[in-house]
Length: 277
Ligand code: GLU
Image (cartoon, rainbow, N blue to C red):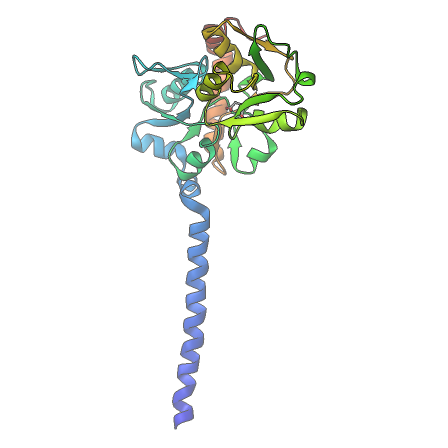
């Protein structure tokens, strides 16, 4: 009799453990996909429409692409105008956009967490980043260079042995300079404002990032010059949560229509002083 009673409880334990392991597998799948991917599964475009605004991750410290004017509080630049055009395409109103500050280091986690819908922030398309996010088509071609004082003896990568070079955390520039000038001492800052302030304070003899970001700095202080030409290729793309192909298509269709209508050329001229070559 005892044995007969034990039998069902054994079966019960077996069934329970199968059910529980099934549950925990289910939970792990949900957890590992994270908030970001769940959002992508829902569809970023639907989320933007439901919310009634686009949330774009942009730079606040990069003249020409995304710079916050401390007096007016306005954020302006090439990336900002693209964000507005995207809001107009999706919601019919270019003012329906919230511009959230990202830095080179915070932008991918913020996208993955669902804090922002898209990164439009001087971001280079790389294979390493493609493992974490999807990219739009290229919308701007930059290249890495060096910013030094006008009277500096530094002429390019070949002069960087033993030199303190300033860069920004999470940027391709910080990674590239270590490969291209292994004898330089690289100091990393959280954002471009801090890096430029450090250059002016003499904490390093050169600042390295994309030519177009350096040109923006030089425009605010003509005691500095670009040297060494462009020693990398930095194609900019907008980053979208992985797997949301409908949103990637939406963004690419915006780029295409901006190019076809001439709006892209107008923006290029507005921010960079000339039409694209
Ligand atoms: N385009 C480079 C990058 O994506 C440098 C500019 C930046 O830090 O955003 O890393």
